[in-house]
Length: 251
Image 1 (tube, helix red, strand yellow):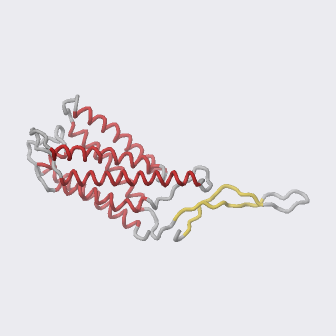
Image 2 (tube, helix red, strand yellow; image 1 turned 45 degrees about the vertical axis):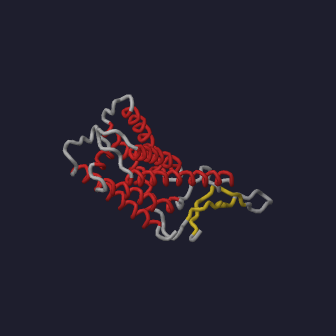
Image 3 (spheres, rainbow, N blue to C red; image 1 turned 180 degrees about the vertical axis):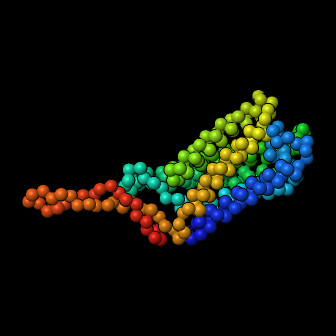
């Protein structure tokens, strides 16, 4: 896929701009709003259609840019040989599920940006409930998709992805506790840490895609052969040794 590296760079730019706008949105709001006890949505509704809503849309767009490129990440094999057809089919299903979850994250962000929550201290209406559950879908979908994609990433990227996914799960549970039995204690802080962990996962995906070669290079596994020591009275035989990864242009 020509332009794979460009997709990663565009996504990184969108993530960076979204982070900048989110910071600006927090600095420009009413001083009576506390980031410790109020959610990002509470800040966004005070500046309807402002920079925080724009930041959410940018994150959704960055995800959409990454989706086609993520399929180009070559899957590693654990045994050094070409994976069996059943295993390849399972990997295709996993990346399909991951793409669907990342699309759900993007759709949830867009819906949450378009449909506002209620003003702090006022009763929740229908729009506020739509906003809440769109946010819940987004918060749950990205870590789940990240976990499914982690085994396709380079070792260091996979390790950090799993760490941030686990952190997201812990923070999500903490946020649920705070929202209900915890009387919203520090819910704003917990939500912001959750968002940082999830955006970190998205950033790792963008960095991995940026490192992919343009033009559709793939890594395919081909057996390497080496000569064996000939026994007396026989010709030298050839037996397969460990597999090596051979890049194929235009695969």
